[in-house]
Length: 145
Image 1 (cartoon, rainbow, N blue to C red):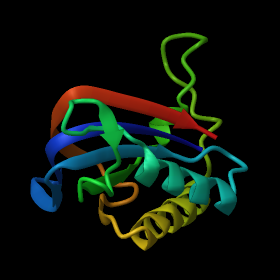
Image 2 (image 1 turned 45 degrees about the vertical axis):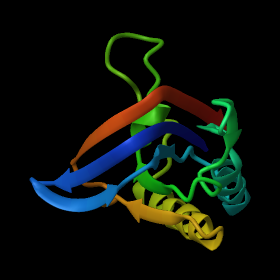
Image 3 (image 1 turned 180 degrees about the vertical axis):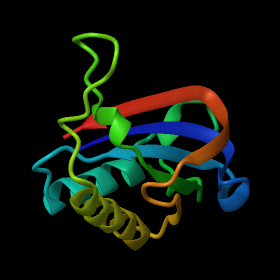
């Protein structure tokens, strides 16, 4: 399981030009599920996301979490995080989990995030989404478990 989290001032997700989700200050999180991943990994990812101290405190040091700043999370499923492009020029996605199982773990992870009291917005699993985001910093963190 892997996520890429980007600190943002705001972000907006649309599908077919129609707004689906929008957040203010917080994180845009791209979340990938690898074949064989389990619920425990999703729980650990959720805990890590809400605990990451990547927001500035009064002194400008990264000492606050998304919870501390009362930020939101735009949580987006993205199987392409498991694209392997070591051979050739077309990525292979054989490490990515089957869509049914990936959706199950994505939904579970989103629900776990909500249990931490963070506002969570999602995309539409499997849809072709357009995401506009205003990065802050920029700060980008990758985590794999």
